[in-house]
Length: 160
Image (cartoon, rainbow, N blue to C red; front, side, top):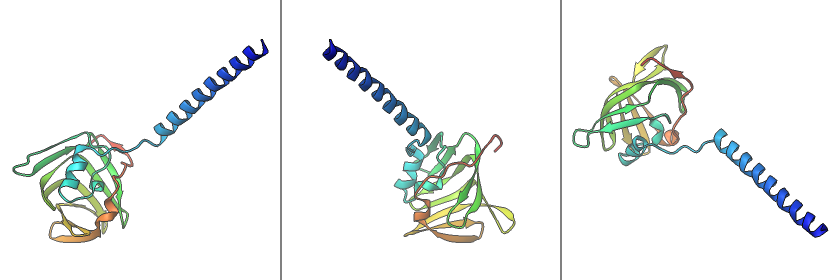
C-alpha cells in the first residue's frame, strides 16, 4: 500500500510540475514573441536591403516584378524612432514605390522629423555597407547594419 501511494504521489507531482512548466513557458513566449519576417521583409533582402526598413506590422504587400511597383499595407499608421540618430518617423498605413535591385524610388508613405519639420523620404539606395536616404534633392548616408532588425510601432493611429 505504501509503495502504491508513493508511486501515485510521484506521478501527481510530475503532472503538476509539467503543467506549471508548460504554463510558464507559454506565458514567456507570449510576452516575447519571436518576430518572423513577412514576405515583404524577405523581398527587401532579395533586393539588397535590410528588413529594418519596414516595421513589424506588415499585413500584406504586392509587387509587380516587371515594373518594380510595390505597395505595402501596414493596416494602420505608426510612429517609429529610426537609428542611428533617433529621428522620429511616421509610416502611413500604405507605402508605395518602385523597387529594383539596390534602389527604392518614387517612395511615398514614410516621413521623418528633422530640422523642425516633417520631410518625406522619396528614395533609398543600397550602397555597399551603407544606405542612402533621399529627401528630395538632399540625401543622408547611414550604415545598413543599423536597420538589421525590424522596428516595433510605438503607437497605432487610425489615419493615414
